Image (cartoon, helix red, strand yellow):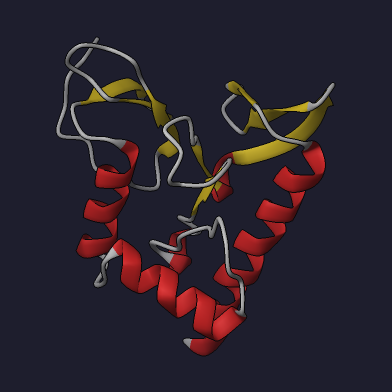
Length: 151
């Protein structure tokens, strides 16, 4: 284990809750696996603040601009396609966040979904393939919206 004051960035593949006495989040990154004492939501809120708004502020903007109400992907940097996507309600402890730019393929595994990432990593989500594809489409729509607004 490598403890760190990790910051979500373009190398972040996914971050997930981790049941450990010291660490609360396991982070899959193109440079390796990291652990954080912060929760997934704390890491995400820190990343939102670094990019100019709170987590709640970004949620409200997406709701009002694109009329998406629940389980919102959160755009951190549209130029680099950094947009973490929740696997379930962000209010649930077991919510896994995976980053749009690193998803290569989505495969059904019964009632679950296997994400294949660009670096060869895999992650099994406890949600349907339909829901996962819908979430990826939402993230693409959000990123496209901000890319078009900036031109």
